[in-house]
Amino acid sequence: MPKSNTLVKICGLTSEEQALQVAKLGAHAIGIISVEESPRYVSAEIKKKIFKTLKSFYPNIHRVSVVQNCPIDLIIKNFLGTPSETIIQLHGDEDIDYCKKIREKIPNIGLWKAFRIKTEKDLDQIKPFEDYVDAILLDSWNKETYGGSGKKIKSIYLKNLKFRKPWWLAGGISIEWVDEILNNIKPDGLDISSSVEISPGLKDLKKTEALFNFINKS
View 1 (cartoon, helix red, strand yellow):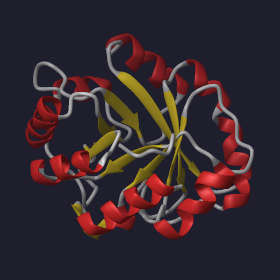
View 2 (cartoon, helix red, strand yellow):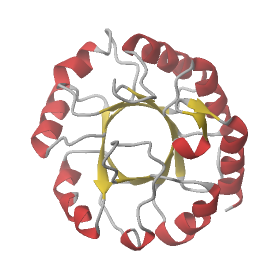
View 3 (cartoon, one colour):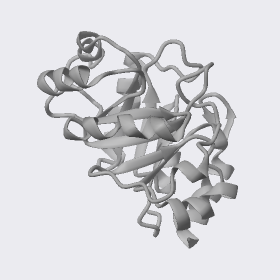
């Protein structure tokens, strides 16, 4: 596992083989995209298979199902019986009422909420959510996509951020930026996807390993 106290999530995986390889490298969380419009989309059946395999070999790794503006009943339906995920990550425009309802209907699974940050003022919307989620994820704003764009949030917005809940940073996280992130921004976790990809959903394992090694030394 990485020696740094910063947790690492690798998101947008699409195969059992790569999920196991990434877990072996030291990921603390692995994310699968349950958003049909995404080029990294994985069906409920394949997602369950990947997560069940991960649970068998790496039971302590968080298994994160990423959804976007999805009806709660459909999320439950896509469990296909017993949930295989440990975290539901809301990556759309879900409001506090939605968070309350999902808490009531799915109380035994962790809840993370992503916020897309375009300007510093966007950070002000987060505080009211802290009573209803287990972690906060900050991603960059992009008009074409809700995530996985590889674009960075401006570092100046991220200095001295404090939340009552753990927070993860996403958006363009590469080796070139990690040093500044770990020393100056200091999130609880890094959410990494497109910066270690060959193509959407297919990770470059050498790049992924190099990133883990860099974090190990930091």
